[in-house]
Length: 94
Image 1 (cartoon, rainbow, N blue to C red):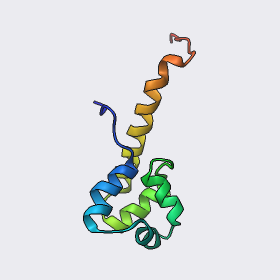
Image 2 (cartoon, rainbow, N blue to C red):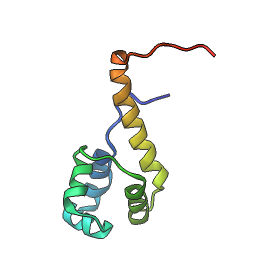
Image 3 (cartoon, rainbow, N blue to C red):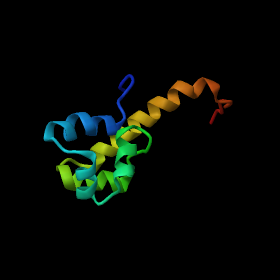
């Protein structure tokens, strides 16, 4: 069952990881080996969590890369489903 209005993984990262650990975006970006601008884009929902970034999160925070990718996929699918009525698709029978 899909979650209604799932959070962007960046929101989860900020609220469930960075804030409780007292980590700044700049310090976290340095530890992850990415730019502060890129990490900020993820946290603010402007960039997606890619497989590479999911692996970086996994290595840094000890959770699985799959966890982050599943969150991103759920968020993306929820957004697309909100727009599905605008798709001009004809049903095909097998």
